[in-house]
Amino acid sequence: MKHLAVDKARKIIFNSIKPINKTEKIKTRDSYNRILSEQIFAKRNQPSTNISSMDGFAVNKKDLSFLPKKLKIVEEIKAGNKPIKKILTGDATRVFTGSTLPKGANKVILQENCHQKNGKVLINSYEEEDYIRKKGEDFKKDIFSLKPPRMISSNDIALISSMNHKNICVFKKPKIAILANGNELIEVGENLNDFLLPAATKPAIISLVRRWGGIPIDLGIAKDETAAITTLLKKGLNADMIVTIGGASIGKYDLIYSSLKKLKFKLKFWKIAMRPGKPLMFGSKGIKPILGLPGNPVSSMICSQIFLKMAIYALQGYKHEDITVNMILGENLPKNTDRKHYMRARITYTKKGDSIVIPLTNQDSASLKNLSESDVLIIREPNDKKARIGSKIKVIPIK
Image 1: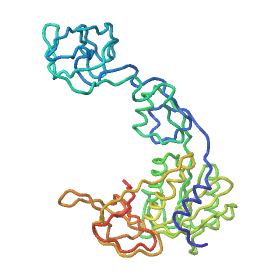
Image 2 (image 1 turned 30 degrees about the vertical axis):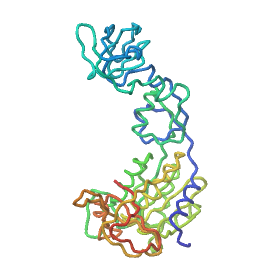
Image 3 (image 1 turned 90 degrees about the vertical axis):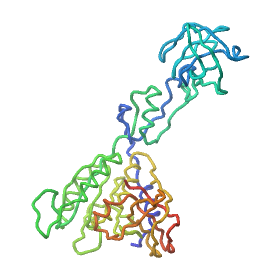
Image 4 (image 1 turned 60 degrees about the vertical axis):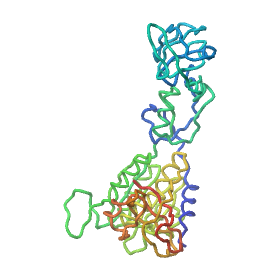
């Protein structure tokens, strides 16, 4: 198969994935990073009445024709209390931030511009601003809404709670089956020798699946035997998606490809024009997608960032795009090859305090230490020209 461009591979994956379209009602407070599945309307106005935005005295502007002006304090209204008295000519009401304004009040005088004594307030000056938050100024009942699909942020949780929704409907978390492959791999914590490796990438992928809204199902480690791989892959057919780690290349013992063919999976691509991560595989059986990640740990993790993240959100009916940021390059970079390159890099600061991005010297696809030290991935398009110190370059934050 021809090596696909990264953008084409992402498009194939997104267009191939059908959302699971199963929903559930959960508490708003538990909805962080979930995908909203139903439109929700505000159940109340915010604010629900005209309120003061500052501590001071509520008055009617007609009483401010000349200064200084002495007014009678007829009431004190704390936030959450209902006003009792209407503001009449010559009256003022003591208010605080969040206090509901009494009828007849159309301006708040800041307390620092007043002098209070013996039940009266002397107003010496006032600001042009009225310091009033109007009823429904933030959002209006039955008019303002949030529409699906929307990834719920912490800020959204505050907003939805203010709209007075204790529970909301979201798409169910997709189940993602994860299988590592390789004779050299054993589970983390088991007895090692010089010829075996802990399957370090698998728990990392499991953590990413959780972070991106999926439910990981650990299928374990399959040895380099077609029968063993096929048996474990069959267990993954009950999940919404299967992810394999390793065995997707073309070596004698890279058997994921042949095992998938036995299970009637149709492969849509096998290699991509990217580094690290060339041996990436994607296919499906009916509507069930499978993503074959490279065996090299760094390649696997970066491919997860670029492809798996998008796929998990697509299963939840949401189109995810990584945020890219322009940063100042702190080192010269040579001309790029014909493959899109995601370079591990760190953010550091100049003596003036300006942030710059420095690519790590070692870009080997097996160096997990370097990946752990990285803050961002520098994006280099195929055949990019030399990049000079001080030039702007696109990065993807990964921390």
